[in-house]
Length: 449
Ligand code: HEM
Image (cartoon, rainbow, N blue to C red; front, side, top):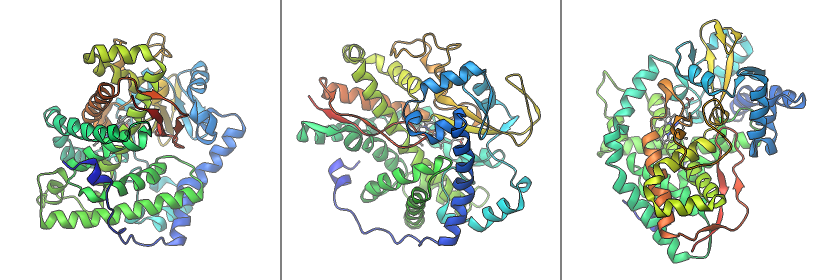
């Protein structure tokens, strides 16, 4: 395992990413973001909650009051992008039922949309929220991809990773101890730990890891519908650079395979082999999901425990409580706030008629504050007995592959931090990331002591 100094050290020249193709970029943006933006903007003007959530930065920063407004309207209501649910019971039903899927039938779309999707289709501009990423494909393809990666994330495989996570956390903390004083904890710790760990798991060379953080930060926005053009272009550039890196990485591992998951994926026998596009989608998802989410768990955790100081002190006195604390952080301020599904079969949902093709927005962050499941849900309590009933990792067939690893990073990362800097305090204004689907901090000024 490399040291943080090596990671943060000299950077190799940028890879030659394929250039943007302007006409295709405009068409891609228009169909994926421009059109949804029009719907969402109109919805926000009419006071529609989903429109407000996705378009109004102040609501996005503090969405919990809006979630309660939605809850008061019932378990399922109509929003600008279809139906929406803040209910834990309905969300669980949707996520676990095969009456819903993640894919949608493109052949039923108007011809102009179909043309735009086909014209704009390009591997190098494809993000993790587009097929064939397993996040957005249904069985049987989903089953095929998932089987190939889940072997690397069994409870046993994850537990074997604990020494790596601990060592990585310790070496990052050593570097922080040398610096002392006030630091940005997201930039210097919460973002670094997950990227170092997932890079190790995927056999990524040390000198590219700082690039991932830069690319990941820009590309994470592609999870959100309705991006402005300039942000989309920045995200697409980052995606192109990531694909170029992956292409080079796969070549290297084909010539010289290691023990890591990606070496296994590039070396699959013909009957299991992934196509080039499937390989890119799978590894890009693992890489992105591996570090763009856990950073939020760590940052949200530090802010919550700083605001509930007695709980931080109690955890320091009884570190076995960290497992429960991580579950409560995931529940209380979920790193992934939103997901969605498409209705596959006609029926009813929360007392409403639903038709095939309809879209349902599932508000995971709201489900995790449902008073039907969590007593006094707006209270942050690391000793909450049923905190683990949250849906922060989703449920059903798309349940997070990396949940065990994320929990391990959360527990080891926060525990090690509290042991090394028991008097740590947030001493500046934390700045939230300007994202909708993911929820966390971009900057977190703390004083180490
Ligand atoms: C706190 C950290 C994390 C959170 C909150 C989180 C959350 C989620 C959620 C909510 C989903 C499912 C979305 C849906 O149902 O539509 C998901 C899927 C996924 N996550 Fe995570 N995740 C985290 C960390 C990780 C890590 C460390 C990895 C590392 C490999 C990872 C890999 C994946 C993959 C591959 C999927 C797709 C699974 C599928 O579609 O079958 N995640 N994650």
